Each structure stands twice: as C-alpha cells, then as structure tokens.
Length: 310
Image (spheres, rainbow, N blue to C red):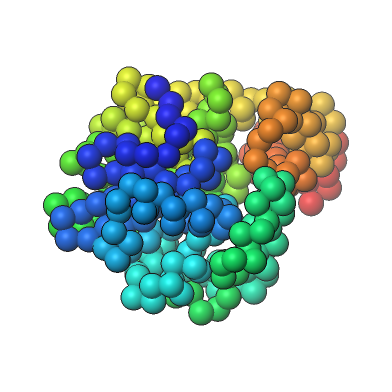
C-alpha cells in the first residue's frame, strides 16, 4: 500500500513535507534525525508539521542527505543556519559535489524552477534556502552506523541514480530509506531512475534485494507499507530491466541519443503530465541514461554513428 499523506509512518518515524517531495524524521531515544533534504519550498510545510505533530525541533541533531541532487538537499541550508550545531551528513562524494560552484548554481537554479512549476516560489523570499559555501558537515561510508540511542541506522552505498547516493536501513523497524536509488513509487508504477549509471543503479537494487523491509520511505510520492513494501525492491528490479530494454529499443531506431531522450521524455509526459520535474530537466535525465545504456550496448547497435553519443 502506498501512503502519500504526511504523518506518522510507524513508531519513531514521521513523513514530513509534501507528496512530491518527502523528508522523514527518525526519533531515537537520545536524539532525532531528519532523513533527506527535499526541495527547498517544502520548508514551510516541514516547520508547520513539526508543530502540528508535536515534534521537538531542538531534538533534531542530525540531517542525513541521501544524495546531492537539488530536490534532495533543498531544506539543508535553512536547517544548518537555523540550528548551527546540527550535523549535516552525506557521502564523501556528495560533499565533493556540493563544494563545486557549478553544482551549487545548479541546485539553486533548479530548485527555483521547480518551485515556479509548483506555484510555491514565494517561499524563497521568506526563508534563506540558497546553497552557499557555508554549509559543511561529515561524511559516511558503506557499513557505517549512525547511533540514535535505541535506533541504529546502517549506511549502504547505492550509486547509479547518482554517483553520491547512499541509502539508510533501520533493522529494528524494518525501514528502508533508499531515496531514488530504490526507484520512485509514482502513481501505480515504479519509475526506474538510473540517472548517472544505469548498470550501477541495477546493481544497487540487487544489493538491497534481501533486506527485511516493512516500510519503503521514498523521497518522492510518499512511502510504501506492508506486503507491497516487502516486494517493492523486487518490483523495482523488474521495472529497471523493462525500462533499460525500452531505452535500448528507442536508441536502436536511430543511434541518436538526443532523439531517444526526447522520445522517452515526451512519452513519459504524455502519460504523466503532472509530474513535478519540468520536461526539459527530465529530458536531460533521459539523455544521461541513454548515453550510458547505449555505450554498454553491443558494437554496431543503433543505426547512427558513435558521434551521436558525444
């Protein structure tokens, strides 16, 4: 079952934010931790929900970024400046990316563009949400554990959606925070999101296959619970296999990565016109996937020249 309304997920876990952009709160016996950073414009929703749900903001001592894409780090600058002692945690690669001026510019630009698409840009006038070089924190790696007292949060490196993706698993609660490394539970489908390296994305899904899970807490479009949660990663593996095949067939028609990206993105928005990403950003995502998958195809596949991939 898929739940898209913010509120309590299970004992010690809360879903905050909005349907299209989710963050989660883990309440340990010693302290609390936000998981993921959402899109910046949800900050007012998160602050209101903390009050409505009776959650102490001062107990939040950690914020775990699952990867460095703009729609997953948006509220981080506000919380770090509002609570300077909060520990911002991410992969070493995420911190490398977030130190690059070009990456920071992209985070800020894309965040505002999505806010305009969703009619929420006024939030940026009320809160300091811009990424600058003053946001720092600590790095986590494969096998690390974060201690919240009675809760242990295990870190898995799950690249492929991005080069910096990590996932977090709480064995006591059987909760998995896979972010987009686990696929996106949009409407009744699972969107395969092997943005930077589709092969590694599929490998990361395989890595999560055998985790005992009762809750999949996704960063977009809510969380999955119960029977569906227990088979969600298996279904995401199947979805990724099918989408990779579609990418290969689409590219094979012309050998042109740009054409294939436009076709894939156009087909997606014909089915799902209300998806939160602007179409041109989605087309760029599709182009990344096509280029990786095409380069992994057998020699001679596609009717275009190899130059089409550069």
